[in-house]
Structures are given as structure tokens and as C-alpha cells.
Amino acid sequence: MDPATLVGLLLAFLAMFAMIVLEGANIMSIFLPAPMILVFFGTIAITLAGGTLKDGLRALQALPKAFRGKVGPPAEQIQRLVSLAEIARTEGLLALEAEARSTKDEFLARGLQSMADGIDGEALRGQLDDDISTKQAADAVPARFYSSMGAYAPTVGIIGTVVSLTHVLENLSEPDELGHMIAAAFVATLWGLVSSNFMWLPLGARLGRLSQLETARMNLVREGLLAIQEGIQPMLLEEKLQGMVPEDELSGAGRKTGAPASTPATDGAMQG
Image (cartoon, rainbow, N blue to C red; front, side, top):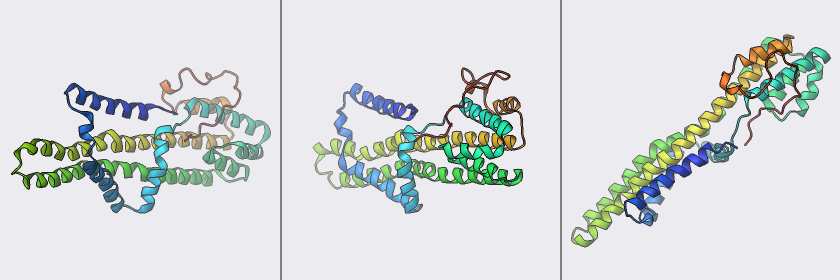
């Protein structure tokens, strides 16, 4: 689990509450049911209106992933592919069928099974590319949904403020209550901005980033499998794959080129 999202959101809200306390205001003054109902339910409603019900369900299902999602280190994936290359060279491509059944990484399993079934290189590349494109399209839906919520929320908050100010203008005969009523009117704008920048936009960005990392991992697997099918030597495969990964992501993990192969590591599939 990568705690970045949870820690970041908690710190953001703590900073806001700290400001309220330091200003001498009451924290409970911003927790008004009417503006919060409009901002949160209104934002969800108009975002659904711009998409489909299935988009909303996908976004809801992806919410735990935003907090728990993680992509394994590239070094682990490289070592896994190097070990598969060693198996293929010593036992043949048919031996990869057993590896396909034992792995929890569906993308890797499909590629290994296809190689064991005798698929040619061009067909294998096409299959893997299609799987990556499908994954990217599926991941884009929840990320775009939360980003859309982040775009709508401030405007919904302004609508709530306008509605409340209309109520204020209806009660100008009660000057003692105007200050409280005007302050309450701007709570809707506050929650529109807060929900957008402290919740929806970060969630959309987080899901998008996880999708980028997963796509990079799948690209690494694709190039590794294609090289294994061509009969590349394990040492050369390691050099090739390490060249696809930033050096700082390899430091402190994985073996150096030319060193004996290590025990196969666990798959670098996404967890969560």
C-alpha cells in the first residue's frame, strides 16, 4: 500500500482546520447540512449526467484502488522476466505454460500461454498491445470521472452561495442576522472549492498516475516476452529491460548485469 494519497489528503484537511482554529473561528461553523448536501450530491449528480451509470459504478469501484493501489518495483519484474528467459532457453517455450498457470498477473499469464501455444511474434505483439490499450481505456474512465467532479464542484458551490444570498436579501429587515446568514451563504463556495481541490482532483490524478505506472509495467513485460520468444540470452534481456527503466528506480534492487541469476521474484502485478 502506498500511503501518499491518504497522508496527503489528511494533511490538507488538517491544514484547513488549523487555519480555522488560528483565526479564532468555530470548526463546526463550516459543517452546515444544506450547502454540503447541495455540493456533494449536486456534484455527483451532474457528473453522472455527463456520463453513464456504469461510469459512476466504475469510479466507485476504483475508489479503494486510489488509496491501496500499488505497482511492484520494476527490478522485481525484470528479475521475473530474466528467470522466465532462463526457463525458455533450458526447457523450451512449452515449459512456460506451467508458469502461466502459477502467476497471478493476468497480462503476463496471457502472454506466456500464447507463447506456449506457438503464437508468432507479430501476433503476440498485437495481442499484448491490444491488452495494454484496453487497460488504458478502462483506467481512464474512473480517473476522468473524479476529474470531472473536481471541475464541477466549485461551480456547484457558487450556485449554493447564490441561492443562500437570495435568502439573505429576503431578510434585510433583520440586520442582526445578516452577518451570520452571509457567512453561512459562503460555506457552499467553501465546500465546492475544498471538495474539488482536496478530494476529487487528487483522486483523479492518483488513479491516472497508477494507470501510467501499470502501463509502463505492462510495456516492460511486453518487450520482455517478445525478446524471450526470439530466444534472447537472459543476460542480454536484463540489459535491455534495465535500459527501459530510470536508473533511480533500479538502485538498491535487482542484480547487476553479469551477476548470477537470483531466485524468481514475485510478480510485479498491481495490488488493490
